[in-house]
Amino acid sequence: MRHFKALMRKNAINWKRTPLGSSLEVVCPIILMLLIAYGRYAIISSVNLEFPLEVMKHPMFPIARPVMEPLDEVNRDVVTNLILN
Image 1 (tube, rainbow, N blue to C red):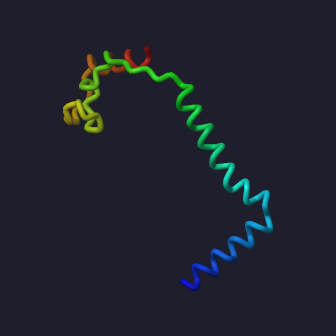
Image 2: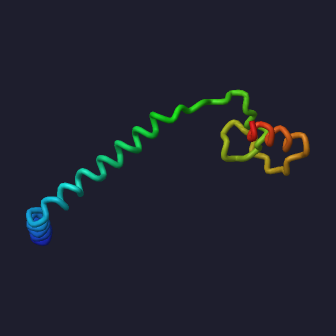
Image 3: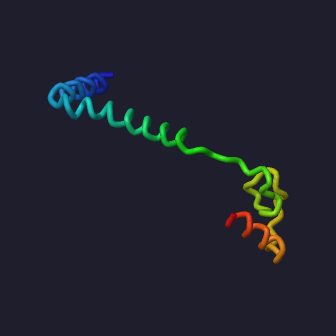
């Protein structure tokens, strides 16, 4: 507990010595989070319900069957067309 008190005292002294730096330590993360939140809500996301996840056959997608087979030519064309469109 003694070390914690000494550390808090040292930090308080450092905050008093550099008020601009101390205030920027608080304000900069807040501004960054506000920018990230604005960017998240400014970008309109769209959900394509016609995209066939079962064609991807990757275990990361929960609705896809986790079969790791190479894509045949038909499925490869379907996926390429969906990605490019």
